[in-house]
Image (tube, rainbow, N blue to C red; front, side, top):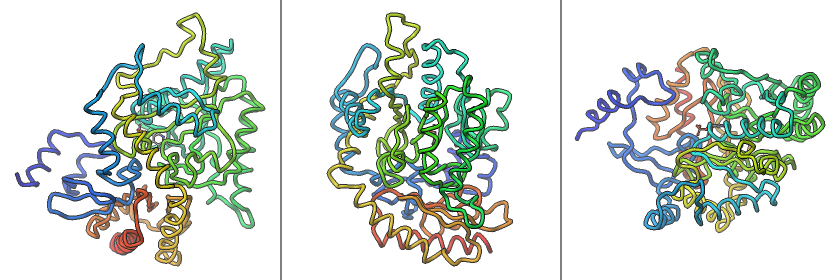
Length: 439
Ligand SMILES: *Cc1c(COP(=O)(O)O)cnc(C)c1O
């Protein structure tokens, strides 16, 4: 079948995410038939280098032989069983390994299938924790300006991205937004840590006023992804941890995007030397294979729910909670981290990625705030064009590169398999796309 036929059928029957469908009257869909390492191969045999890990999920390339083998083996053993009243080896092993990776500080793993659900779980657990402690009035949430924690109605309450939130404002019980420690806000002579301290002062003022009705603060550690790869100093996390302790407010680290070594350490929080009360993982945890999310929490949280009364328990559930296939993909992913010493290898890879970006874009007249944290590199493009993002995306495809700017922010967030030739292809494609998009 011709692929133009496939595209027409897709547009007729598939409602694509994050898309004004009418845009596809002019912007063609890309029909992907195969994946191979960092490459996506389309119906014409065109090869696209996946510069954004297929929406931040893929860690070790497409059709990774080791993850494939693990999922295949699990497929022939047990595809799924409910997790209420039942258990299985993959979910136990995954929970134990994640607990070990936090030094047993976050030793209780609650599973769901996607990031937004992990946010919902952390928020519900936080409020329920206070209720079980006889303080039901502590049920509000704080989040940072420009935060993104998912798009279900509960998660939108702590998401500060107007385009995702405004249409649903009447459905949402909005929380309070505090200042973002965005390092780009540095005034003359200020460091990123100074900006972090200013933002922490705003958080403190808010906590001093509202702590008695606040259940938790939720943050994306080190990088606020969806609002434009906003990067900030770890000092903010240290101060936020202190303030949350002082004001009896729980801290939720949403590491759905920044976890799994994306920022240079397995958990981004490690760079601040702190642990949250809840840590959410999803996206990369299965290597980008299968939907899975997990909320890790402390003994103190777990103990607050442990009781003879059913209603004091956490009764939340999803049909596919702890799915064995997804857990097996996650275990294979953790195996690769260990066996290949990935965090170390990524240091050199991140250096090469950053160097290549700095040499191409560091002096570009239309580029501002070139920034990097581990395997995320981003810059802002100075342009008045309202269609910059779409133009850049299309131009990059023409260069054999998948990049999808967030507004005027171009970013690179590739899988951890790029070699130097891939990096050069990626940056050359981005440079040509930038020229074309600004034309
Ligand atoms: C992607 C993302 C989510 C939502 O995850 P979904 O699986 O898309 O629901 C939540 N928080 C952060 C920081 C994310 O990047």
